[in-house]
Image (cartoon, rainbow, N blue to C red; front, top):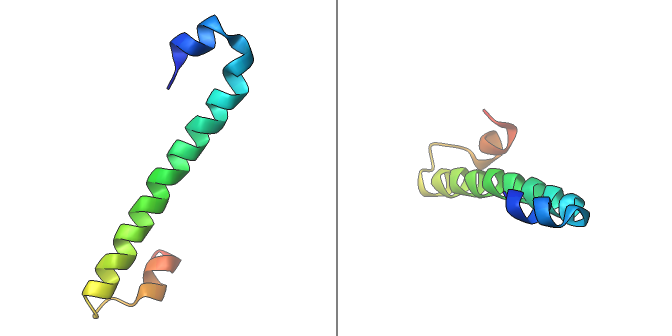
Length: 54
């Protein structure tokens, strides 16, 4: 995500890796929230089934 920063300041590599992991997890969390909202809007879908990945 920040290759130029990592190139110029190698000591930031671990922090950049952590930010990349958080970014990836954030996308998955937002997607899960979208699915839960959809389940709430459409009562035919059970929210617990969304959480289980059904």
